[in-house]
Image (spheres, rainbow, N blue to C red):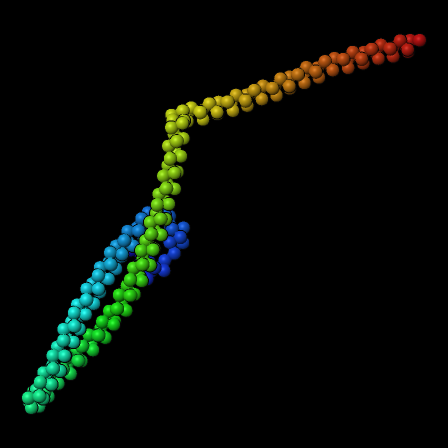
Length: 218
């Protein structure tokens, strides 16, 4: 099943909205271009047939016009020879040709209108096709640009990408270990300081106690 169901759908389509909603815009754009190209071939073939039919109708009108004039001349000739019966028959034949001629002229007018509409549709379709091709090229360029960036990064880092990541993780781990060691040293230093403070405090208490004993003895 095609994306479009008829020529009017293509002419009235909003390609931007269609591609924005598509999961795979590049693929949809390619399908749109293909369907438009197929439709364009069909429309051109229809236009060519219409033009051929018009030319055939014009030739037939020319033949009918000459035949009508011929019957009119025969009617005049018959009257000149006093053959009213032949003149009457010639006039009857001319009336039939006149009717056929008018019918072909009416048909030709309809052909001209159809050809005009087909030509207008053809121009609109070609404009839509140009738009679709432009969008498709843009999507391809966008994809190629993205792929080019990936290849460039692969060319720069290559197989070293995993090594770079591994080294980065090792560095992070080393920093964390150093921070942990610093915290340990800080805690140890704090413990030693506390021990010295405790000893100093005990010595001060002993001194105060000795002083108090001397005072009591006096």
